[in-house]
Length: 367
Ligand code: ASP
Image (cartoon, rainbow, N blue to C red; front, side, top):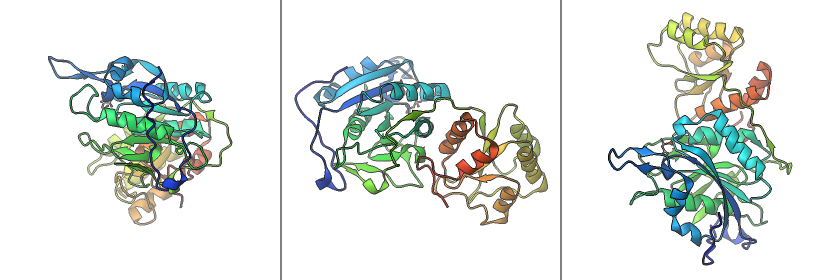
């Protein structure tokens, strides 16, 4: 698809506006449409939303033709509600990016909001050495509704994917979520609202850009890895990961049953506050038994803001003594997908433990 039209090439402004390179060639962007509310249509009788195809979406955004971009497209068949996303879909998205990497300046992934933070986190690990923008967006209301947020989100995501820095290189060289008025690092983002147009937040890392009257990049926070110049795509994730969510009153039977789930190699343990858990002897021994039985357990707090400091309280210390790895300030989404990625690489438990403490793609703050 090519969106030709009257020449209008909106140039997003940067936090350092003087540093913008003049618009070079016409940006070439690939839009990967997976589904989600942005392209859904309402059943006139029930009002329920169901996924629809990409043409429907484009028909509802005639102003796309006014962007002087060349837009290619890849569409998921069928388009899906993101509640149905799996690591197989993540591999399909990563492969679509890898196959088209040289031909496009950037990539915009249209995705449902419900699991967008998981997909963004997974892609950040799967796309090693990424040096081009991969921008995920979607919407809270379908683009075909009279009042909606999808058009602005889509246009803004395309403009961000097309943005260049002073040297003429892509401004964003990482996987990010563009939603409402903020651009967030994908593996730091969490869906925080099912009703607000600003559905996502990054509690432990600053926004990469704000999008109001101007798009203002905060270049000091953008991911600038040492570019190898080469993209390595890891599509083999190991889904043998599960999440155990603590709550007062959790029983020994429930905890042991979860930790003994056949085939599961690693758990994200959602703890309280600074990474605390009960110190009751049965609790500690259930955790110890699981670790000694070869399970990897990563401590991630239930608090969206802040992280795990296991040595701050006895209740966290006990977990560390039982062999639980601190997830530092990882989001749950990043912890789950990072474990799937590391296990997919075939790493041993000590190697996974060490990698979980290091920032691979800017997903955590190292101690
Ligand atoms: N259930 C939808 C999805 O995640 C919600 C949305 O797109 O906002 O696909």
